[in-house]
Amino acid sequence: MPVVPEQRAFDGQQNTLSTARIVSTIPRAARYQSAGDSACPALHDDNDKGKEKKDMWIYPSEQMFFNAMKRKKWDPKEPDMKYVVPIHNAVNEMCWSQILDWEKTHRAECGAPKLLKFEGRAHDLSPRARFFSLIGYQKPFDRHDWTVDRCGKPVRYVIDFYEGKRDVRNPQAPSFYLDVRPALTLESSLDRMRRFFFGR
Image 1: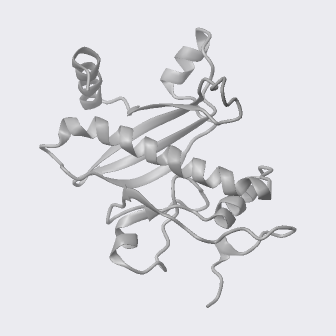
Image 2 (image 1 turned 180 degrees about the vertical axis):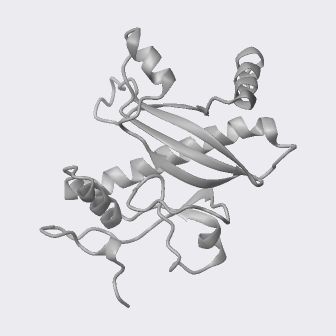
């Protein structure tokens, strides 16, 4: 079977990286939009067979993740991929879990939201992140915009990624804080106020 381009070893690569992929728990909208070269949160592969894979986004392999980072002119280390990819996957599962928490408000309208598309916007500060940075808080190290298909209605979410507090007992362990919320619209303003006053 020919190797798909994303799974080929990058020019100059020294080590063999895994090409195995993991199926996420994130449902894929029927009219999904491909991520292109992005490694986040997942790359769907139409060559993957089976209903389970067709219905879910599939995370990139170590090789695909490494290639995507190289194309973006980053400097990934091959031995790090076996640690970076599982962390990437776990963080995106957390993102989806928090989005579902927001979507509970609209469960009567749609009981099964799905991910339509996503966009990495690391260089674009959200208005909220910009405001907090101006009053002295740290800036997020990354930003994603995820668009959810709420049973035919596209709803955009903004996700700011921050470094979390280190565990003094295990300072090498990665720590993240995710600020997940619907992009500001009239409807989402009501959702935000409802959460502020009445909680989840």
